[in-house]
Every structure is written in structure tokens, then in C-alpha cells.
Length: 238
Image 1 (tube, one colour):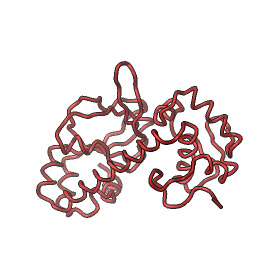
Image 2 (image 1 turned 180 degrees about the horizontal axis):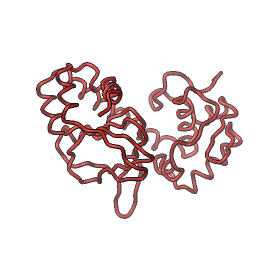
Image 3 (image 1 turned 180 degrees about the vertical axis):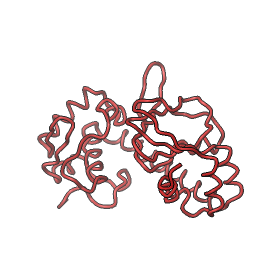
Image 4 (image 1 turned 60 degrees about the horizontal axis):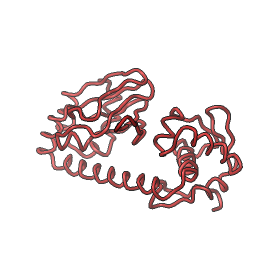
């Protein structure tokens, strides 16, 4: 594993406060691998053998039932995923696939559980991480149940622009069908919603979204700090 990858993992809240002995011990049994785009990393129902840490690229966590498939969350570096299944030593509830060429570090779940029993700081960090994941799940559930499809799309576009430094334009980081699934929409509904938002602050150039009026787009999304995980307001004057 590259030393720069270890440095990135060390900065994750999950490992930031643990002892050097604990961290180095986990890194000693872990390995890093580069995966091609659109590769299935594991399937729902598989045994949770590893904690995965995304170093480069992108990953979609998705679930299947009765012939249907839904994207549950979209991950970007540096982030860990499927922690709860590793802690409980239970099957994955979701499947994972790469969105693009991705570098992923895998920590054996059995070693992680042993380290948690030994290191109180790691146990506290795991508790904090799981609490954060629960709150993110509640936010997403509120977003899906309380907002219309158009409002959800507007909120996602604004959040994406903020994540990239409050840019006025950006390329969609995922395929439209994955974005539609994540937002609880059909691809056709997503296309219609994108077209409808042209009158409310966006322009489209292929896969590039251009925000032409922050305030109008923010008015559609109606920022709520109890749903949207952003530090600042979306619009300039709203």
C-alpha cells in the first residue's frame, strides 16, 4: 500500500485518534487494489469480510429486490463503507460497484473487530461514525419523502456545486440513470426535471450543468439544515 494512501486513511475520523500501534496493525493486514469501472465489488447477502475504504474514484451502493435495482448512496474519496456489517459480522445489506477506475483499501473485518475491543479510541470513533451514518440515512429518507422530485434534483445540484467549491458549472459525476435512481426518479423523470429547471436557474451543455441563477434554484430546493448537510445557505441573498 502506498504511504500517501495510508496518510489519507489516517485522516479519516474513524482512525484519526487511534494509537499508532492500532493503526499500523490494521494497515499491516490490509491491502490496496485498483478496480476497473462498473465492476461489482460485492453483492448484497455476501459475508462482510472487509471494511472498504475508497481512496480514488467512485462507488455506488445499491440494492435489488424483485427484479428492481435502486442506488442507495454515491461515494467519493476518501470514505469508508459497509462499517456496520463488518462490526456486526453480518451479511451486506447492499451491493457495491465502481463508477469509474477506483483504488480501494480493504481491512479484514476480523482484525477490525479485534482492534475495536483493544482500543477505546477506535471504539469511540466507530460509535461516532455509525451515528453519523444513521443521521445521513434519516436526512436522505426525509429528502425522499418530503420533497418532490424537482425539489430533490435542485437540492442535489446545489449541494454538488458546493462540494466542488461553490462552482458555477460542473460535470455530472455519475451517469444519469444512477443519479435518477439515487434521487428516487426514473431516467425519464430526471430528464424532464432537468429540462424544467432551465427556467429556474440552470443551463445544460451535455453532461455539464451551469448554474445561471443561484437564488432561483435555491428557492426551488428550499434549503433546510435538518435535511441538507451544508454549512452555509445555498443562494446569495436568500
